Amino acid sequence: MLLPKEINPDNEYPRLSRPLRLGIVGGGRIAQTQSLAASMSGRWTVVAGALSSDEKKSKERGRDFNINADRCYGDFQLMAEIESSKNEGIDAVMVTTPNHLHRDVAAAFIAAGIDVICDKPLTNTLADALDLEQRAQDSGVVFAVSYVMSCYPMVRQAREIVASGVLGQINQIHVEFLQDWMVPEGIEENPHIKWRLDPARSGPTSCVGDIGTHAIHLAQFVSGLDLERLKADFHVCGAPKRLEDTAFMTLEFADQVPGTLITSRLASGNRGGLRLRVFGELGGLEWDMENCERLKLNIFGKPDQVITRGNGHGVSPSVERLVRTGRGFPEGLIEAWANLYTEFSVSVAARRDRRAIPADLVAHPLISDGVKGVRFIEAAVASNERGGTWISLDH
Image (cartoon, rainbow, N blue to C red; front, side, top):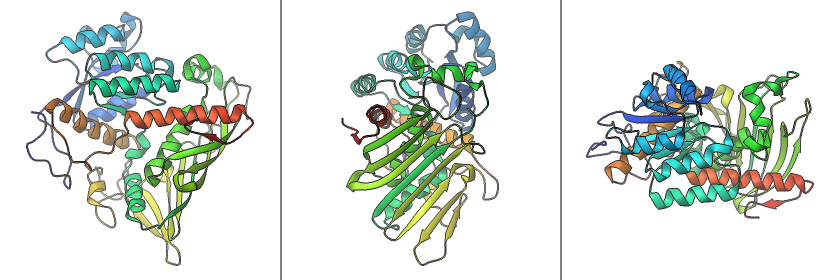
């Protein structure tokens, strides 16, 4: 058994009887970030990888992840087959390839009965996303999607505040994700960036599919309201590109709650400029990723409150279990990734133990959230192509 007999959802996440074994497909920068965070969680050991389609390069790259050469593969399909047949094969795989490979890689590991955590966007088409969702449901594997912004402690606190009714009925939601790394002239020729502007690999969007999906997931996660329709305008504001670098959207969530979404990679001075504002009939809250340890809460007519990450002082017990250091000792994105891998480990362990876990114990993004993200992308593309008309997400 991986999990202890008794699990108390009000305490810290249950410890495992052994570290879980993690594989990697895709050996780029985000794979390094995620493997570091998985190790930080104390619940995972990276043991295998298909880090390049060239087996020799995969083995060379494996040294950076401390993976033995005999478990470095040049073919993800072969990796899935061999690892699933080993007595101590991988328990789960992270998929960190360019977008166009997500579907085939994830499908191979689903077929092998291996749990999956996949980068977003889930796939480049809704048909592929729905296909993966069905495959995951049929096989019973755990399938998480890396909307990691939902794993910041103060985002979880914001979600609890909204759900508690403190803000009253929600009446508007505003979210933006602004970055500035596409400002320099010629940056689009950088190998790390080039594929993100290639429709064959990135899909029909660049900025929207990458950071826009983070923004819309965050808005829905915190508010508890699903996006139902949108109007979108895509723009290329900098050097000529095949795909957009900026987009402006008008949104409508469930219960006809209006909202806005702005996303850009040409916003000088913004690096991790993800900001969320949720307003209700009684008050509002605001969260900014560049100041991620603070959550601003206002009840109309009363002094503003600032809740900070740490123990006590307005932070709930379910949020405290996501906290690693005391107040005043900062945490950030790596810790949020570690929280995602912590919760993912509990879900993976529960499946392997063939047992249920308390409903409120984990809240990591699921494959259904990935499908919603692809629906959002397709609706935004359709709206932009039709001159910014309203498009329903079930169009």
